[in-house]
Image (cartoon, rainbow, N blue to C red):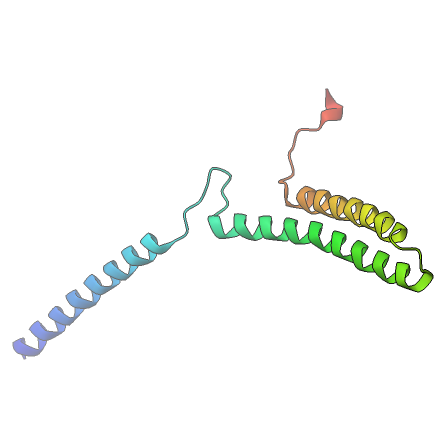
Length: 112
Protein backbone atom coordinates (compact mmCIF):
# COMPACT_ATOMS: atom_id res chain seq x y z
CA UNK A 1 0.00 0.00 0.00
CA UNK A 2 2.77 2.43 0.84
CA UNK A 3 4.42 1.48 -2.42
CA UNK A 4 1.24 2.50 -4.33
CA UNK A 5 1.07 5.74 -2.35
CA UNK A 6 4.71 6.51 -3.17
CA UNK A 7 4.05 5.89 -6.87
CA UNK A 8 0.95 8.06 -6.74
CA UNK A 9 2.85 10.89 -5.05
CA UNK A 10 5.67 10.51 -7.56
CA UNK A 11 3.22 10.63 -10.49
CA UNK A 12 1.54 13.70 -9.00
CA UNK A 13 4.91 15.43 -8.64
CA UNK A 14 5.79 14.52 -12.23
CA UNK A 15 2.47 15.91 -13.49
CA UNK A 16 2.95 19.13 -11.53
CA UNK A 17 6.46 19.46 -12.98
CA UNK A 18 5.11 18.81 -16.48
CA UNK A 19 2.39 21.43 -15.98
CA UNK A 20 4.95 23.97 -14.86
CA UNK A 21 7.19 23.26 -17.85
CA UNK A 22 4.26 23.47 -20.29
CA UNK A 23 3.19 26.82 -18.82
CA UNK A 24 6.74 28.14 -19.12
CA UNK A 25 6.97 26.95 -22.74
CA UNK A 26 3.64 28.57 -23.63
CA UNK A 27 4.72 31.83 -22.06
CA UNK A 28 8.03 31.74 -23.96
CA UNK A 29 6.23 31.16 -27.27
CA UNK A 30 3.69 33.98 -26.92
CA UNK A 31 4.13 36.74 -29.53
CA UNK A 32 5.89 39.77 -28.17
CA UNK A 33 3.81 42.90 -27.84
CA UNK A 34 5.00 46.28 -28.98
CA UNK A 35 4.49 49.59 -27.20
CA UNK A 36 0.97 50.03 -28.58
CA UNK A 37 -0.16 46.70 -27.16
CA UNK A 38 -0.31 45.02 -30.59
CA UNK A 39 1.71 41.92 -31.24
CA UNK A 40 3.86 41.54 -34.33
CA UNK A 41 1.37 39.31 -36.14
CA UNK A 42 -1.43 41.82 -35.68
CA UNK A 43 0.76 44.69 -36.87
CA UNK A 44 1.77 42.70 -39.95
CA UNK A 45 -1.89 41.91 -40.67
CA UNK A 46 -2.88 45.56 -40.40
CA UNK A 47 -0.07 46.63 -42.73
CA UNK A 48 -1.02 43.94 -45.23
CA UNK A 49 -4.65 45.05 -45.16
CA UNK A 50 -3.73 48.69 -45.79
CA UNK A 51 -1.45 47.80 -48.70
CA UNK A 52 -4.13 45.54 -50.17
CA UNK A 53 -6.70 48.36 -49.95
CA UNK A 54 -4.42 50.70 -51.89
CA UNK A 55 -3.42 48.15 -54.53
CA UNK A 56 -7.02 47.03 -55.04
CA UNK A 57 -8.11 50.59 -55.85
CA UNK A 58 -5.27 50.99 -58.32
CA UNK A 59 -5.87 47.65 -60.03
CA UNK A 60 -9.59 48.28 -60.43
CA UNK A 61 -8.78 51.68 -61.95
CA UNK A 62 -6.24 50.18 -64.36
CA UNK A 63 -8.52 47.38 -65.53
CA UNK A 64 -11.61 49.59 -65.83
CA UNK A 65 -9.63 52.18 -67.81
CA UNK A 66 -8.07 49.54 -70.05
CA UNK A 67 -11.44 47.92 -70.75
CA UNK A 68 -13.13 51.23 -71.53
CA UNK A 69 -10.19 52.25 -73.74
CA UNK A 70 -10.61 49.02 -75.69
CA UNK A 71 -14.37 49.53 -75.90
CA UNK A 72 -14.32 53.16 -77.04
CA UNK A 73 -10.88 53.17 -78.78
CA UNK A 74 -9.60 56.11 -76.70
CA UNK A 75 -6.18 54.73 -75.78
CA UNK A 76 -4.65 55.77 -73.24
CA UNK A 77 -6.87 58.58 -71.95
CA UNK A 78 -9.50 56.63 -70.04
CA UNK A 79 -6.83 54.46 -68.46
CA UNK A 80 -5.03 57.55 -67.18
CA UNK A 81 -8.26 58.99 -65.80
CA UNK A 82 -9.24 55.72 -64.12
CA UNK A 83 -5.76 55.22 -62.64
CA UNK A 84 -6.12 58.59 -60.95
CA UNK A 85 -9.64 57.73 -59.78
CA UNK A 86 -8.45 54.29 -58.57
CA UNK A 87 -5.52 55.82 -56.68
CA UNK A 88 -7.84 58.33 -55.01
CA UNK A 89 -10.29 55.56 -54.09
CA UNK A 90 -7.45 53.41 -52.74
CA UNK A 91 -6.10 56.26 -50.61
CA UNK A 92 -9.59 56.98 -49.28
CA UNK A 93 -10.02 53.29 -48.40
CA UNK A 94 -6.67 53.23 -46.61
CA UNK A 95 -7.60 56.34 -44.63
CA UNK A 96 -10.99 54.86 -43.72
CA UNK A 97 -9.42 51.56 -42.65
CA UNK A 98 -6.73 53.32 -40.62
CA UNK A 99 -9.35 55.43 -38.89
CA UNK A 100 -11.28 52.28 -37.93
CA UNK A 101 -8.13 50.75 -36.47
CA UNK A 102 -7.23 53.76 -34.34
CA UNK A 103 -8.33 53.52 -30.71
CA UNK A 104 -11.06 55.94 -29.80
CA UNK A 105 -9.72 58.70 -27.58
CA UNK A 106 -11.74 60.31 -24.85
CA UNK A 107 -10.31 63.71 -25.73
CA UNK A 108 -12.09 65.67 -28.46
CA UNK A 109 -10.42 68.55 -30.27
CA UNK A 110 -13.69 70.49 -30.22
CA UNK A 111 -13.58 70.74 -26.42
CA UNK A 112 -10.61 73.11 -26.48
